[in-house]
Image (tube, rainbow, N blue to C red; front, side, top):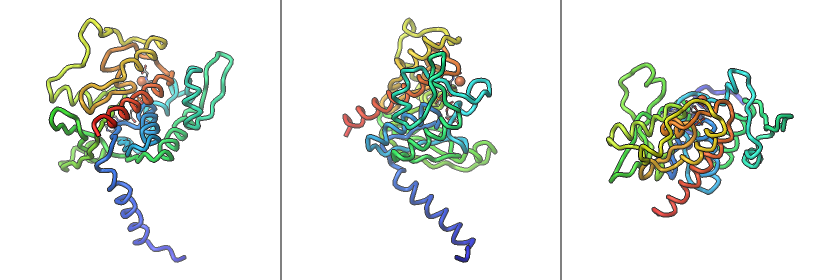
Length: 261
Ligand code: 48H
Ligand code: FE2
């Protein structure tokens, strides 16, 4: 065939439009394409929910690329084996009793699993605000990360969702925006909140899953954003908790959507 530059351009624009159009009003909007967000996306899409992942960087994967201190291996506790198998992430069980996966394989497999389950991944897009109607979070305001970073005055667009999942990692940016704008507080009283965030992997892994929950109507926090919001111990470079938290967020979203329908 004679390669035609204009047709190549048209193919890109038309496909992107078609790819995005039907997901502007979807079931689940996941902000952040790290391990927690991508796992949540796999499970919600797998259940037939229309799912969009917004990732501000070009490459989804979040903190997984760097393994531990740039040593590009990801460690999971053996209990995560069932999720790794479900997601098609092949691993080695090592002498220490942990499951180990090269970080690039973990990221690539997670993206592929979410994609094959039917989730739409929109990269290079930052969620910069939320939408709220009748005290219910019902979508996010989006813009090109490049425009945000360059400080260009470009007004945003939005994506609506029955549930928004904050999987933004340490920033917890979506929940913090909600708390700032609503003057609200976390749904825990002070006594219950653990006032430490120093490293304790065993406790941190347990608590990140336990505290994965609705922050308000329509808004769930999962993954590292939970640890950050509730000041639970950090876990360092072990990632099973992120997968379990993502899966729990998906289950909560599914239950909620079934009830509000
Ligand atoms: C669009 C956004 C926005 C936004 C952020 O940091 P992540 O990997 O988060 P998790 O929770 O999936 O995994 C946490 C893990 O990587 C980690 O940091 C651990 C286990 N730490 C332990 C410790 O002790 O430190 O991914 C979040 C993703 C990133 O790719 C961001 O670019 C993206 O979210 N993101 N995307 N709009 N507003 N904010
Ligand atoms: Fe981290």
